[in-house]
Structures are given as C-alpha cells and as structure tokens.
Length: 242
Image (cartoon, rainbow, N blue to C red; front, side, top):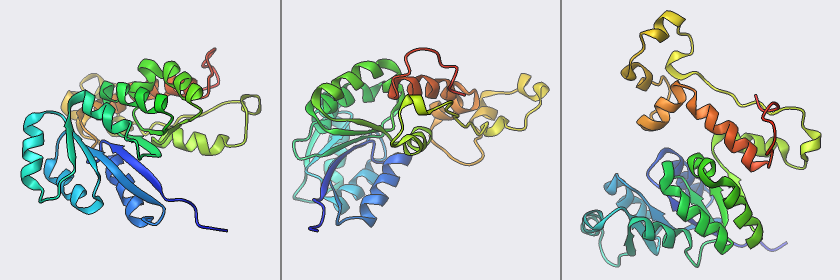
C-alpha cells in the first residue's frame, strides 16, 4: 500500500499545555503531519521558537504590539502574521489545513471553531467552553459540511475511544473522572476555610488560574457533563452521565 498522505495542521493555542503536547506528536511523527499555522496569546519567545522549528506559513497573535514583538524575534523569511479574533478565524480556515486543532481557553475559541467546521476542516477540539456556549450549532455546522468535531481533551478523548463502533443504545452509562485537585482529601472544615490561593495550588499541573479554579470547585466537571451531552447528542436526561 502507498503511504498515507501527510496531514496539514493549523494549531490555535500552540504555547499552552495541549498545544505543546500536540507539537511533540508532530515532532515525533513528522512524516505524517506538518504544521501550516500557529497562534499564541502570550509567550511570544516560545512561539518564535516554534515558528523557527515548524515553519508555518501563517501565525496569529492578539494585537499589533504582539505582532511587532514577534517580528523582532524572527529572522527572514517570516510567515504572514495576522492579529485579533479575525486573525484566529483566518488561521482556523487556513486553505492548506486538513485539521484545525483548537487548544485555546475560553470563549476566544468559539468563532474560529465554527468557521473551521463550516469550511469542512476536521476539527480537533480541546476548548470545552466553546462547545458549552454553542456546541449544538457547531455540531450541526460540521454535519452540513460533511466533517467532524473530535474532542481531544482527556475525558472526552477517552470516551471517544471507548465508544468507537458503538451507538447510544449500547451504552448504559458514561463516567467522567475528577481528581479533586488540591481538595481531594480535604475535610468539610478545611473546605469551609479554603481560600483562592488554596484552590490554585493544584498538586500535579499548572494550566492557568481559570482551569485550576474550575477544577478545584468541580465547575469543570459540570462543563464536561454538558460537553458530553452535546458531543453524543444526548439531549435529554443526563442521568446516564456520572
């Protein structure tokens, strides 16, 4: 059999935890994947290093000052650098991309994800907030374009792999795990006196204040339940999601 065609990826949120891990996969499997677009909100020096290594043709940053700073960190030839939300949408719809990987945090991922799905890109999505905000619209847009939205955050990627080849009628329940973070072994008395600083002291990872607080309070798990219902079209009762 001839080798599979090399897949092109545009990656939104390349300097975050998931973005860095995605680039490690590309680094190891360079014969199967290539990067055609990158974006980052902060960590411009890290972004510049990624640009030098992977040679994307298009890069998105938040504003003009970030574009100027990034240009100063790069030698020529340089990629095209776009800015703002419109730049993220342009990046998500990169004409050479087969896969748009969305690893941004919060509502910033909404419009780019919708645009990529509408264009027919295969979307690898780690942005659960975007799904919670407009997931049904996203899934409908992907169906109309004949493509798919694949969850790649840990919980839903695991569920996807477990459910591969099965329909809803085959499933009795889905179980989402929650580590408990810094409060896993806390007593009710300790919880009553907990401070934001306590909640931010996650024992195993640093993914920013919002996700850390959401995990410590289990708000993140609530979002994951909503995401689960959207991805598998379980629009009715959530009783089978635990």
